[in-house]
Length: 215
Image (cartoon, rainbow, N blue to C red; front, top):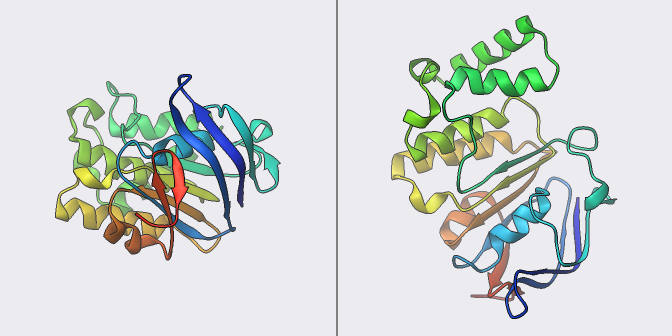
């Protein structure tokens, strides 16, 4: 699924966010990137999500060079960043509708799909609430629910876990496990090995922008 060769991300002459990363992640595998803040986990996820360009190196997803990869036609990918991205002045319903409309669904298809999501995840009470009025925890939950609108080949979740209450942690963990089907490759970033163990048997440890054997 993901092959990374000699990957570097350099922000200044002296500072490497990522230094000579070499990784292989198999199709359908669940992997956790573990390390302290600023260790390189988020930088790697942002590159895989095509939000950051590497300074040097090669990245392939399903044997397609990352720069040629089209997330609309080549595979379905979802990314949950630490700072949730929504149309903040729009309602929850309107945010879902905006995405589905961009995918070319008809009005009736959009309505059916959103209504099914509202029922399945019990979000009737907040469907008409503007996203800017929701808490950060609620936005994380909504980010994951939004991804359930399609079946994912690749799911990437940044370190959202440090900011969650115990109750929301349970909800988030359940949602991630629900989104991780047999065909879905999961990459989760966290500072805590005990969180990583909830999702993955394979741990990849990061320190100062490099992959290390242990922390």
